[in-house]
Image (cartoon, rainbow, N blue to C red; front, side, top):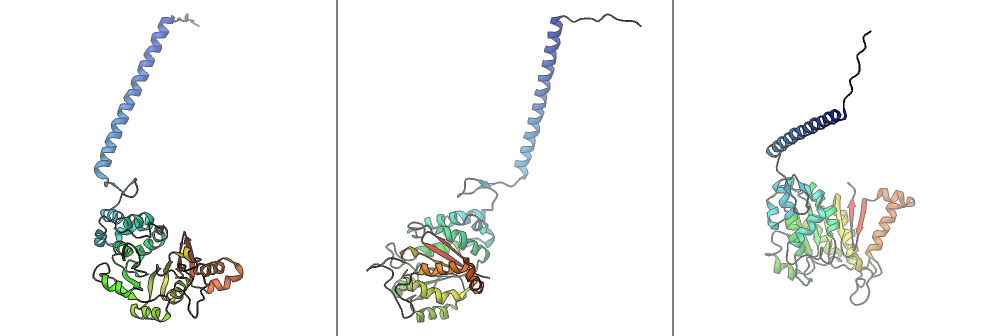
Length: 316
């Protein structure tokens, strides 16, 4: 067996070898990074060329892929532009209803107190706008044109016209002279009813004239407890299955005295009745087991209450 003597490397030779390895490794990494960046740039250029452009939503700062129709529906600037949209442009009503309602209302001067003194964009954004998206030809009744408001009547009518251009809009108002004065202005294109919402005969005439069968009723009328209750008992049966009934300004129900809201009464409604307490009775019926059979027989599907107001949904 031939044995060769092992050759030893000097320290300087080891250092040269190590340096060479470092140089080769760094060069390889640089080459890889250069190739990776070139491929990434090429991919991004392809994406920019072939993908659809994104449009920044004016309500949210996030960029989303949306059509020009949808963008107009959110901006409502000017509000009349919404009238030219088809229902396909209202998909944002399902997810951004509160923002859309608030921003639309604020485009008008005067601005309805629904979004200034109150925060009704919550219930309208969550329930009414999505309902319109599914039922664009909805039949809609609001009680209370606002003739006694300091800024004048029709502030909310402007919002309804802008947001619901395909809806069959009805307004009911106590002050007939005010209605006639604004019939060719703010109320142009709106169906109008007049009279006292606390009078059953008047309510019957409203139902007969309009044909009833409402998708949506909004009570923003006199706010007297018995007015609210008379209206509900008469108009709720005319609401379609799946429809909505909104009641605003329930916070005044306990106020007494000359400027209170418990002075109005009828033969069937005592002045001690408080509208919200009646709604709480519905809530008890829907919650507690001992009233389960009563709840099953009722046509009330849900009650949603926010600050100062509630909305009832009817079973389908």
